Image (cartoon, rainbow, N blue to C red; front, side, top):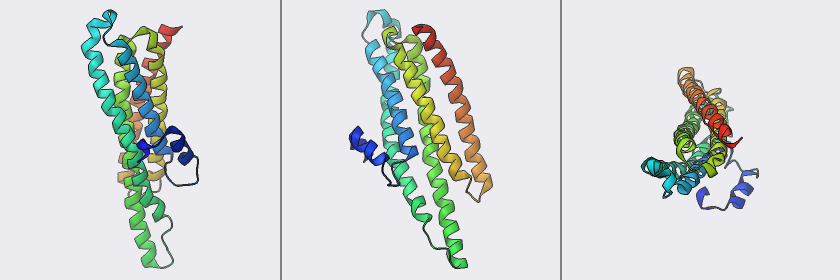
Length: 208
């Protein structure tokens, strides 16, 4: 499992010619870093008298971000598992009409499955961004810059994951299904950009 590897091992795998991990796994990893940064801010906030009024809300953010971080780490492996069938489908023979039809059938199914995990990555990252917004407003002021770093990581992970959807849906024969996935990704991007702009602007006002 990727989450059991060291950072060095993961980046070595990422930079190799192996099909996985790839961009999707990298996005999940970056999203996990965003959630972890939020957790750090939360942990620096709880137990402090200055932030006593927000203690319960910050603890809830911590609990949620831990679950989201772990989910994103699991999605690194899920992305690899989803991409492997697609990688194999590309090399299927297509010399006869039967082989061609079979390859198209396998490719269509593999393209869809390889698009679902990036959607999950985007949804999970977006949820983490909502908690980062709370931490940016109510978390420790000495660590507010880390909320800004976290939300920038989150936006990169979210938009990066969308590219793995679009490259797959572009090749899908079922255009209605492809359009549904594209529209889902586009809606998540819009919401993520609004959150990123809002959180980053507030953080910047605190640190400058």
